[in-house]
Length: 388
Image (cartoon, rainbow, N blue to C red; front, side, top):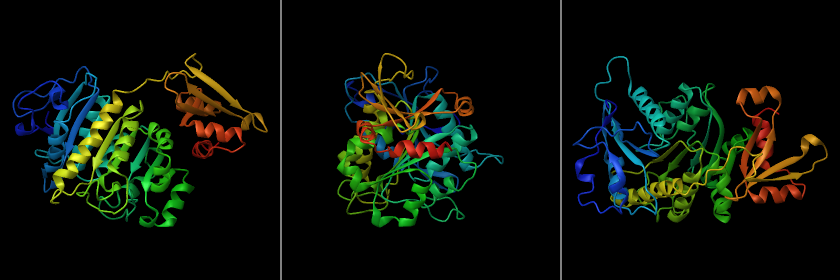
């Protein structure tokens, strides 16, 4: 494939024993053809390093691969492929580096169930959004970060303003944004309030850590996730491009990554923002490789919930309100135990979204709160986003 350069041969397993993850990955290597993806593999790894004048430094994705390939796989038979790294040689006059990234991501998302992007800079999340926008597809974005990258959107795209560039693009295809693990003292209060006014989900570090299981519904609702290495505290990831004394512990981010992998909605996950010049770069790459491992492990722990909520797989709970329109209906899957909240739609929106009803992931806590006459925040935010 003209979009990609092969995985360096020295990274490939030299003595396969069948137990390590790297022994089960179909590679685009220096020797051999591009892997056959006609059967649509479950997962596809894709590397994107630091761009420099039409070339790219692939130390970032390759160092993560080095650690990921040596990890032992779980008790499953993985179907993984590695397309190598996006390259920029031979773009021609009509194309740009940004176009190449968007084209490669669009191809990857069409070719596999889940794309895992090993990206040097978090502004590559903008390219994921652009791939969705050009396909005219709405999506939910989850951002795991200590701060908000809402710099001057008038400036050139970089790791400090990519989120602002997405949000201030009036043609953006975002339905919802979930900001997970931000730290209050690193974010201007007005920005947090702006996100709340837009009816997005914002969960600060303290609340996330106090009830980690409550993060699962937000993560289950994500189509795309962008993970900043700087969301972890320094002791867990000393090679993050921004270093903080506080943040997520490594095992906490891995737990969240497993929740993400378990989501049947997830189509693209990116891990970003290690400092390749850090003396601790290899240790940081090892930490991010373990995050990727947990996404893969979560993928193979999926319990596919039947999308038909009227089926016998679901229990239905009605919480009466003052009027019929204010009554709430919850669904719980008998097998997985996961919860959903129903948002009734008028006929025009049923046609627009091609669904008889709109359901959002929630938790048992939301149901219990509703029985105590507390209106779930997820319900209110969904109504406002749907203009109901």
